[in-house]
Length: 120
Image (cartoon, rainbow, N blue to C red; front, top):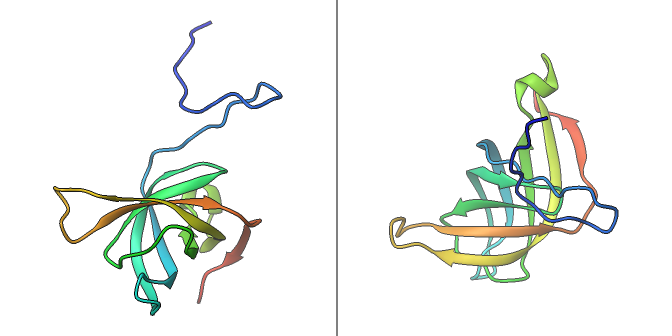
């Protein structure tokens, strides 16, 4: 048997907290650091059942609640346009030198998710 490295931590039952690193087109909705509503297209670059990371141009504050509407990949959705809708709080904001106009935001999910058809 070939063992491959897996990112994540062991939970109390011994299951892995798998983390997936692939781009998923996403719409983010919420309040920015200036308390103004925003809607911004981005790409989730990292996601697990606990949270997700992505880049935003809108400045956000720690503990701000955001709603993510993530495009479900065609391979998983079949011929349907499905969206994963999930909410969470901003856990970390990183300002990166190489991306002056954006920040890397990490959200910890705090709600159950729903999958719904996209607009037709």
